[in-house]
Length: 238
Image (cartoon, rainbow, N blue to C red):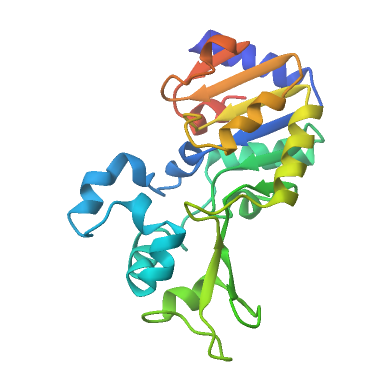
């Protein structure tokens, strides 16, 4: 792995046009679990698998049960940026990193200091009344009981893309543009199994595709460099 890290360091040192595409593995090192890998554990407490609970139809039909799971398993207000987040923020300040495209919804990239972050699946930090559009923060959702209500009486919904919902067109366009224009695309902490997000990689036209992940991905054979291991530990060495 040391040789691969050295190669990655060289790639980073020689460019000022990096885009980072990240997934759940970036956040797990901040102690935010990837619910797909702990499905069995969750099913001991809930009647339905996470993918069902976090679907649009379930939210509409069983809003209170949705929020019981959502508060318990999706909100981590004490989570802090890890070494990967901090390195990416440093690269942006240095002018090396042009954008982050993330599947995560925790806001930790912004907490670390990154400004240009395209959140494909939204953010738990933003919540809106479905009637009047009034904004509510994460704290309000955590401290509410049952179905959170706006002062106008409307139901508050997280600004998170649920299963069965489409991704935001504007965010998709900006993400595609960033990936198309990148010289170096670093993909980290994702198995590239969640679509349509993973399909954005097909827009990359640059010369250096780097994969940093604990396990293999469908793109490993096409990458210029594959670095396997903890993304936080790897980025800390760069």
